[in-house]
Image (tube, rainbow, N blue to C red):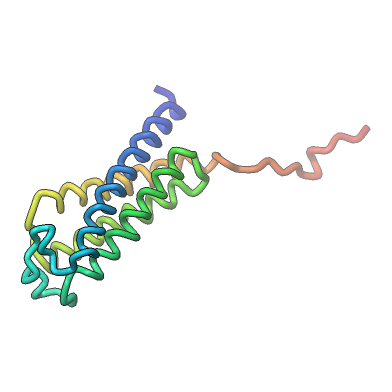
Length: 152
């Protein structure tokens, strides 16, 4: 397989990954914001006892806006081949992995979704770095230099 085909596969996989993470985070974040006590989502409030948060409002807003809306927007940009696709992927991949590291630090490892989304964040970061390296020549505008002009 040539590099262009590999990059195309990576781009599609990245767009699907970002869309999946974004949609699920929007639902999870909305659940936490609409009920910061965690009762609706069956998450005990006492899980936050070692954290700086009295309830799930702030983590829910971050989950909803940064991870949810951010990933949905990034997924759209990825499918549209936006020039900053790799930058969004790197930033959001790092953010998602850090969010999960901090979450596990404060509340502990409580379900399978934490390592699952951590891995998705690491994959997103990896894809973003791969596309960043491949994109060094993408989207560059040719600007004629003085030497390009022919004297007639």
